View 1 (cartoon, helix red, strand yellow):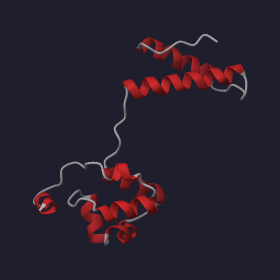
View 2: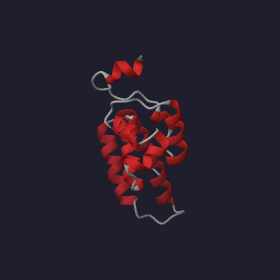
View 3: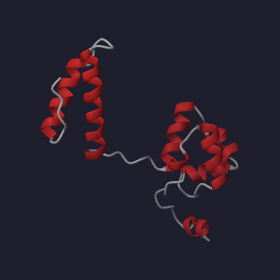
View 4: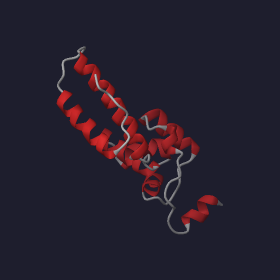
Length: 131
């Protein structure tokens, strides 16, 4: 097995090509072992060179709503009513700690995403939320 670290973009491309050749390898063979190692190397290279920022809280909530087929009304029980859901989804109101807990527990959205800083709130609501 000739496996080397991925140091350049050319190494990365060559490794992807090798992964493609090995993709349908039978499990528990030297080829599948090589595939596992190469995938791990690519993941490490991509994490370093192509990092993906986590979604902001509102985008995470909208994504989970879509996944689960939920409506604004469905989220009201976790956020204090449909009106608050609308304001949060329109980025006019921040999530409270209680909302974060309920969304994490009931919808499985990672708490670290929900507590992340969301894009700036709009209009006068921002100063009201802070004050």
